[in-house]
Length: 464
Image (cartoon, rainbow, N blue to C red; front, side, top):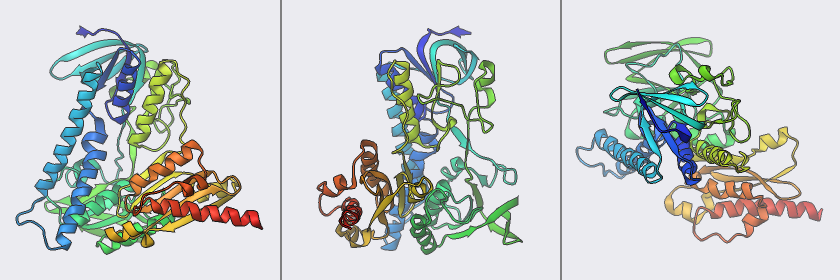
């Protein structure tokens, strides 16, 4: 068994949180090592965010070519998969290059904590290595939730397998109408798959307000996607050519047949198994989440946790943000987490994005607000792009005009939300947004118009 040189900071997990934590720790001059049991870059880079967005973009291009009758002769899904894998390889290689140039030691294998300052890293080929550390950052991520009625295997897929199918399926049932189910379901529909989404709740994308999800629901219908809400899956039978999925809907037992079933009902933290958290007595919630403070510090002061294994949404950019906070805390800085401007994005068509407080949040907290709204249908750039569905909605304090929150449904919402996140973060007012000169013609002008709408409401109130 090989004993490695001790390090100041050991990071377990090389996803968006883990590699960001390692890079930031190294920037502070601390000797740093990172452990990865599967692929450098973690779930996001290899079987999550990056490959899904690559295939979503390919599906959009494919649907556009088909609309104009320009699908190349002999086009196959293998080409889309090859493009996706090339993007993944470039991203993963980029992460590895960044770690190398920053002087971070990369340890490939499965980590097991053996004590509060020691860990063992096991690799099938190289055996076991031991390493000691002053500080530890846990960034082990999450995995898809498996439900008893639909155990993964065969024709029952998690998001991981759904991103690697060799051919476009003729039919697909998606169990779960959250962001992953909608994104992947719509992606396959654009490639020509007959898609049905079964959602247990009253509507798809329950994390967003209904007026935002309505345009997405309409688009899904136009693209031939069947959405069944209030559906509870009770079991399944796999056979040679497909799967029979049993579900209850409106007090009736029903069956739907498809080539595959994709289960997207959530994710669970990787804090169990062989990681060895019980060996050091680290506090966790009943759901397996690690308890942390405002600097991502756990119940053991020199150990930190970030990303999907702590409280909050499982988002890559949240993990990267927490990584910087944790590394800076270890370096002695007084940085603390603040999620007030955390953006949420769904890469559906049209795209959804939000940041800060919603109108409902403000009502529940008795915050007086004004709401400014502007639609894409009158925006010159949106008209030119033939992307006129949707709107921008800005929530501001009724007297101070401070931007409290924003929601967007429409083209490039995933990019546009950054301006509004910055406005919330820096304490900008709607007048600041309305008086900022936006280039013409651009989609960003819809933000300016929504802010102007809210600003005029405040002016009218003051005149009364």
